[in-house]
Amino acid sequence: MTDVVYDNKGQLEQIQSGLLEGEQIIAVYDAIGAGTGFIGLTNRRIIIQDQSYVGKRFAITSIPYSKVSSVSVVSNKSWAGQFFSSGTIAITVGTASYEIEFRGSDKAHHVHNLILSQAS
Image (cartoon, rainbow, N blue to C red):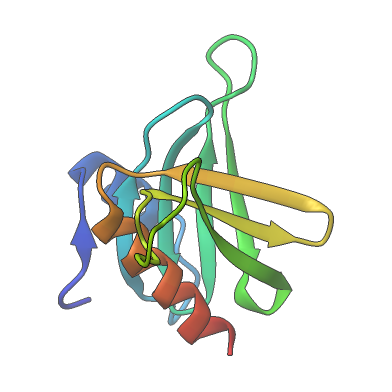
């Protein structure tokens, strides 16, 4: 597990504790905004922590790359020539959409490109 990019050691350790045999972590990024706690990317799947449940409950959602139908850059303004003017992406899986907001567009760009490279 070399060159793993991560924001928070606790989040990295949580992903490590649930790895499948032969699975390797690529990146773990902290998310901001309501609902999502973090996103982890491995060589096999996307792992999202959803904190939007009532009380102290949360969900860890695993999404195989083969199930991703699209990954989008979300912006509330015109990008004016910049593809990544936003730090938010949306991952569509079937009829569900997961929106993740990051601290900075560089992390959104990295996650977007990782998902595209793994899904193709």
